[in-house]
Image (cartoon, rainbow, N blue to C red; front, side, top):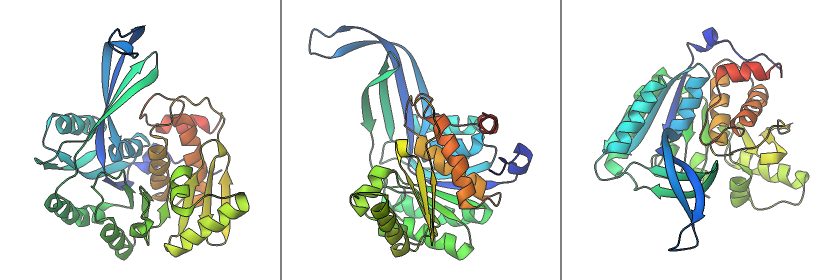
Length: 315
């Protein structure tokens, strides 16, 4: 497999990430008793952490690999947005966050006991149409500076105009990678690459009996949506890339699975970075598979660094 690019070669790479951002909050504590009020554990919180989530985690992944990243999204005009903006700046990400006073920044609060997730609480409201149109105007300016575009759809409303964004990318001759959400995939028509996980793909294409039927469904969807390629991430079965007349499978990299949250973010971030360096999609998928193996061995929405991937080449 082709060597992973050096930090010096990645310093000039520019990736634009657009999509739904959120703030991931973690409350860690000890669980020593059951509540007398209801049959639920009592968590005595000892510490808390905050991490960028959603498209913001994709941006972190891009920056952690050594490329320059711009992030375009919509948030509320609130405390969570300020915390998110500060965290992104710490990671060296150029963030363009359109603040909408009528909405709340999406927050996912996870309560952890004994290193296991006990409860998740979500806070979210959709952005206004006017804010989204303003973001679309900025998209054109950011696109001029980008080598590759990643659209990270978490179904929160930031990618309402995703079809228009993809059309802009095609006219500009820029590769556009999409992590999809929901059942309506026609809005992603014309993208360079779509990266659904196994469950998301089944939701759109239906179930399959064997690999032969899976290939048929995947190639049919790829052709129907006019995609250059379709990558289906298949958890313990690895990931499979479908291109015109070609199928490339990568088996799972053997690691202890600790937490799968954010693994898809790591995959698409790695793919985007490597495409700026002229890697073919099969080559990039090989490295993305390694990165996913590292990501799932970490707790929460973690990223994979350039150093970790370089070390994995010799492990």
